[in-house]
Image 1 (cartoon, each protein chain N blue to C red):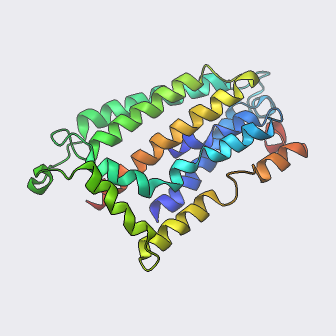
Image 2 (image 1 turned 60 degrees about the horizontal axis):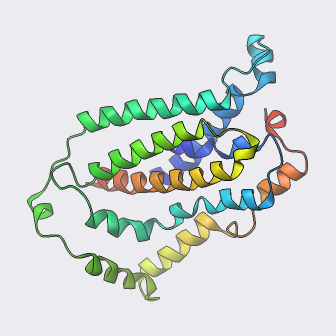
Image 3 (image 1 turned 90 degrees about the vertical axis):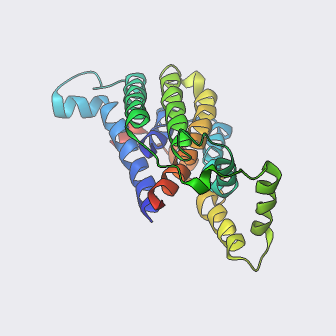
Length: 107
Length: 130
């Protein structure tokens, strides 16, 4: 999952993106910093029978895969803002999966 | 600890793998090809598909045991939100921990793009990295 997070910024190295676009990429890592706010919601909302942590591991994993498939259509220079927005949602999903996997490992 | 190491390592490996596979000079020097081994779109497509496969396997393979205590009645959303007050009590270590994570993970990059912008402005690009 972290490999997925690492490949998006090099997409912009071909040309100099606008300052705002790079700031968007930087802001895209905010979900990693806000894990402590996300965790109680993951603790509250889940499908017990499916698995308390497995629920979010699988859902966020599929979301990351779908976002990557979407990003494979957005590699042009004109799509820099779209890539940054997709990056934000992908990082959000990765942080959710990170929380769930950590708890699963501790359990 | 594991996450602290694995996340930067994963990002580093992902970046390097992507840069090498999508580089024309790398493909020419190593394999004698005039085109990159994998265009960015193909790389993302393959990564997305591989993650779909991995998650399908996890869906069928991972069996999580549900404890009886976890089947008990869930707390309400407001009760969950009320727990956040612990992050605002300066004498609690959770407050200090939250501040620490916000500083470490975000730094001052929220409003200034920082070194990445400066690197690219001074001529840093994908081929130079390769």
